Length: 267
Ligand SMILES: *[C@@H]1O[C@H](CO)[C@@H](O)[C@H](O)[C@H]1NC(C)=O
Ligand SMILES: *[C@@H]1O[C@H](CO)[C@@H](O)[C@H](O)[C@H]1NC(C)=O
Ligand SMILES: *[C@@H]1O[C@H](CO)[C@@H](O)[C@H](O)[C@H]1NC(C)=O
View 1 (cartoon, rainbow, N blue to C red):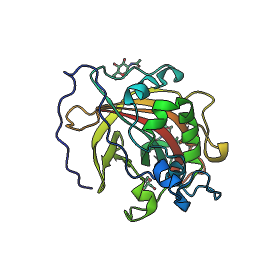
View 2: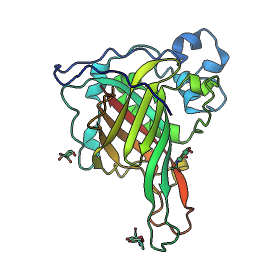
View 3: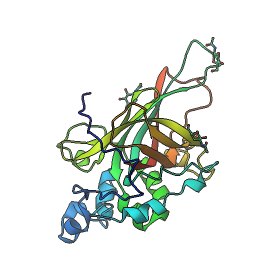
């Protein structure tokens, strides 16, 4: 895939600031709901068809929200051991729920092989206002997202794609990419690598329906050394699912494990 890299104002010389985050316009939010849009109400009687649909009903990101309050609500201490704090020169840009799959491969010629992580693919939905006002809901949003279908289409005319803030995928086995530039907005992108990892809390959700091998680790990712990207640090917290079986026995050569997580993106 081809992407134009956004040029960057070096943030490290700035004092601690809070970026003015552009309002996510594509959630229906309360405005549309009160206006009587039948498919856009949280009290709609049908089950949510997707996480985007769920988000619309709750007006999860219906305008500007207080990112200074949100950054105070990062629960780094819940990981074991606690993850390091973000760099003081950076600003919290957005908090998103990621819903997708962790991918693994297995060496089928090796009877004692264990699954090897080969990246992840996820759709990102903005939940910055929840992070600012109701941090207790964040772990639940991962669980809800994991139990709703994953968007599968790149058709930008589909309703779910209209609600998406961006995409998370890997450029290679160790380079996590966050792409929040879409045909509808230019929020930035970033190529990052793992800096710190801690086990998810033991109470974390193990997989869809509560069944699975566990929740993937909480991570702190740092921008790759040469990358001139917008996002400098990204945290993966409040994970649900994503852990493969311990051994490859009975697994195919390549497989996916559904997961969701809350990502905190700093510029
Ligand atoms: C990982 O999963 C995604 C989503 O299904 C898929 O498109 C991709 O090809 C997979 N990657 C690998 C390396 O298997
Ligand atoms: C088989 O997998 C085990 C576990 O990952 C590994 O230690 C071992 O080196 C592998 N054997 C071969 C021949 O690749
Ligand atoms: C986090 O990662 C950095 C860079 O990889 C390392 O220097 C630091 O010791 C780590 N901190 C913790 C608490 O693991």
